[in-house]
Image (cartoon, rainbow, N blue to C red; front, top):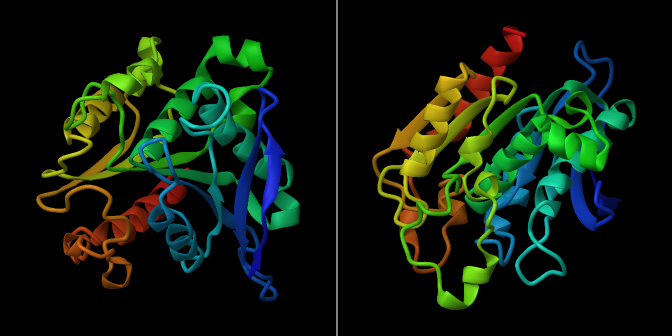
Length: 274
């Protein structure tokens, strides 16, 4: 496997890092080109969760994907989170479409997967890709930058639907744009088919985020599959025993861990129905 760090420049001139995990060639494969998973970690917009980065990328590698973990700008970085975080996603999609042959990628099988705050970044990036305003402002087309599918893990969709009050010293970071505040408002019939998983008892990003986004997808007749687990809390990632952090034993959840295999089954069925 080839791993390295690449610095890209997004459509707004901002530099950001991506970390590809590229499978080595293993000979004369029937399907020589791999799907690509673009992993967008959560982290409350003030850090990037390592549990939702490399372990996810490697899990997708084990299923025959090439993968990449994408950094995006955070609260403490220069400039605003948006539009740059969304543009980072779109730039990453374009980069791998442009270099599909080099990385042995199927340019029609690019999946974004966003967790928690990264789910907001992924979902809003889809809205940006389909928006004529952003297309004209940053000179791109949806055909070049829109992923083919999206997976959202316990995603933040609506900033009003969190389980705690936003601290007063952070209220100036809350976007005034309603379409940024609530990425469900940007769903259209051109939004990629979406797989969502969430825990019913999530105390941080309330499950109503997923319900609102799924309702928007249904209204626009976008294919969607949703799995709501009764228990799981927030931030369970792959929910495996080897990824439990100290004091958070609830992260070991063999039932919620089924989301990964379910997502693979969903993707396979979606590819077959292309």
